[in-house]
Amino acid sequence: MPVKQRFHVHVCIVRNEHPEFENALQLALSDEYFLTWDLIAHPSQFMDYSKQQIDRCDYLLFVLGTGYGHLSPSGVSNLHLSYIYANTKRKPMLALIKSQNATSDYSRQRLDLASMIQKDLLDNAIFYERTQEAVSECQRALNALIGSKPTAGWVRANKPDTSLRTTGVSKPQVITPVATAKPKVVEPKIILKAEDVVLVNYSAHAYQDGNLQDVMAAHTFTWGEVLELLKILPQPFSSEMMLKQLNDSLKNLALIEASKILPNVHAVSRCQINAVDFQWLKQQLVDSGWLVSAKEEHSNRELWRVNPTMTN
Image 1 (spheres, rainbow, N blue to C red):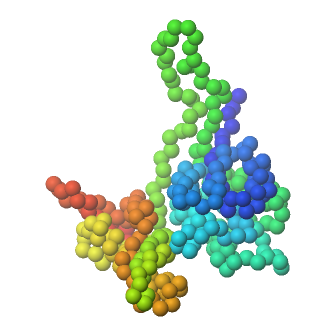
Image 2 (image 1 turned 180 degrees about the vertical axis):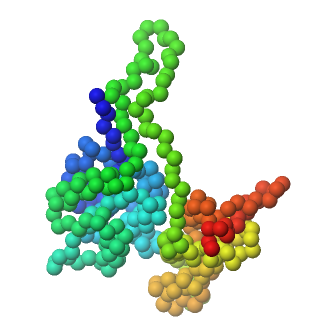
Image 3 (image 1 turned 90 degrees about the vertical axis):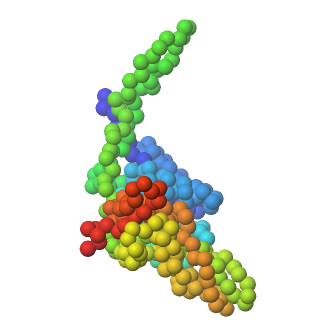
């Protein structure tokens, strides 16, 4: 009897915003797909967990209800950050977006996010009014997405492996691989475009009336902007030089962001990109071939150079 192929679908959603909607999706999809969901509330591990599941899943289901979601320290919602991360990872994605009507009172950030998703995903962005309508369209669109962007998925063994069960005196067992294990897949090389965007969170010290205050913000670079900043550096350069160059490029922007909450701010210092965001950004450049190792012989220093063949 053939074994049905299954797929891991991660659901990015503001949890408990509309419990009946979550229940309807769970009931409709759980028999066909292995579902994971964003965390409830907003613990400090929220983005780490969301990124982990986005990396692991076969397909992403992004649900934008009536709200924008809990704001991260940068002022951008965790839901929005998850969407940007999934988009930069080129993850096959379907979005369900609650339609606006005459009585809707959506925030500007929520409306802007909906517009961006519609522009990015085109036919894979589905607007809905009623729950059942959304669920039916979701099932249809997921089938179409799987057909147009197939992944390896996974399969479940026909019966449990009982080879390790023993009765009485134990004896050596020969363990063989399960024939239905997920086949090894060679991950495609990451392809970045100069106009694609990458969002980083950063912090800075802001000075107002003789007092210092920490401010948190986010900035969206294009990959082309990142490369232009790195090409200015002496080649090769260290990771520390790379980080300093990116941090320095944010000073003027940080002053503008600080002025939104501190009207009398007169200076900023110590602009620092989030360490996790920087390491991820650097790894994307390396994986894409835009950044190549230039480690010197007999040296433990990590040095890099911009690959000229990828930026002409």
